[in-house]
Image (cartoon, rainbow, N blue to C red):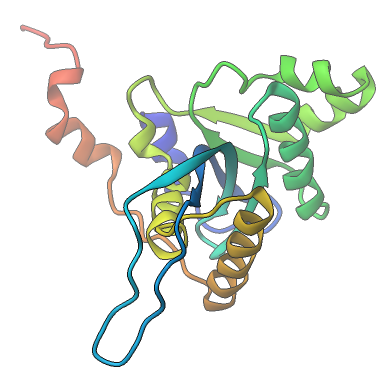
Length: 207
């Protein structure tokens, strides 16, 4: 936890950006009955009945100090999908010396996934460009990308979507708008506060 909080205290450095990454599954839903459109004095009406059309996955990469995010919708969430997403992130920061990547301890989040996806030389080169910082177990709330995913869901994904293509279109529009605004996260929680509020997590020493 303290390692993550120390990373968040770093000043903005375009050569060593701090990027938070997270992912979330989303269910695809088809309306079995036509939605009744909005009319004067009457809101649009949607039947409670629906049909599941499978699931997809959303990857989120957020650079909180720069107010930039990169979102990618995939049909699956495998080791290979994650590795390719990391390659996508690296391609956005070709000018940097090192990318500090904050993420949770999901089993696919390892350099092994890179080697299972790319040739060894490419996997090594990619892993050397990234400093991996993991949130502690049961500490995913420390990942600012999780906060941004919640914003995405509330602002863009609260309605039913039946296909990956529809999801991609909606997410891309949201991403463009949010990046244009340069929306940032003002992180306030510090190590000093953690030692007070979460003192139960620290050992007790008796003098």
